[in-house]
Amino acid sequence: MEKIVIVLLCFVSLACVAGAFSQCYAGTLLQRVGMTLIAFWAAWRIALIVEEGQVHPHMVLGAVGMAVFAAGTMVKTWVWRYRK
Image 1 (cartoon, rainbow, N blue to C red):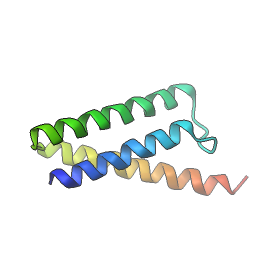
Image 2 (cartoon, one colour):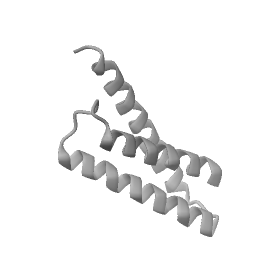
Image 3 (cartoon, helix red, strand yellow):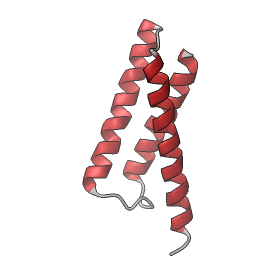
Image 4 (tube, one colour):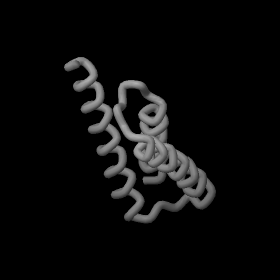
């Protein structure tokens, strides 16, 4: 279970960093700052999971939810990029 959560949090962190610095994503400054903070939080959480080796059930749900949201935002941004 730990490996799945780590992979999901890595995806969330990388997607947030990519979105925060992407010219394609038409987000506000506050959205970009929020994505940067989520990327830092995910990296911090990965470090805690590696140290402790334990994942609580609510972390699985949170990581899946954030990963699905990140994937949906990436798809939306990609689709709308070529509609203009």
